[in-house]
Length: 208
Image (tube, rainbow, N blue to C red):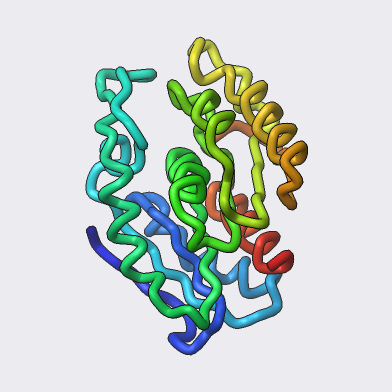
């Protein structure tokens, strides 16, 4: 896994984000947007995963689109990320876009290391995840959720549940007393991923 680090090494706030090739190409814009919005110094550690569907899925699942299934290796990815979270004087926020957003939500159920979760357009349609979230509590104090307002308008029968599932996740978190917001963005899943992720991290940084 390739590690890319940005920002001040002495910053008290550390953002942790799994990324793919497209995210890596737009991360400089994401950083600029966070700097312009959050109003504080931060460090961003980006983890460029080798296989998106394998390395960010918490358990194996059959293909939902195309021919590629999900390999269920998220725990290995989380274990590596946690090796960058050993300084007790720092605040760690995990986040990401799409399947990385789902990974962040799952990771925050598995450990209490993260003070907040920045889940931009998370893949909450992932098979078995709604039931998992009902049975596990997110151990972070602040959770940002977002979705594009056209994301649930798809012919894919699994992925079109994303709207209902994110509404249910938001309601569940609020019921449990988690500081949480659900923000709707214009467009489908493939629009403005860097800007949406920047908004997610910025919101959590302001809440911690």
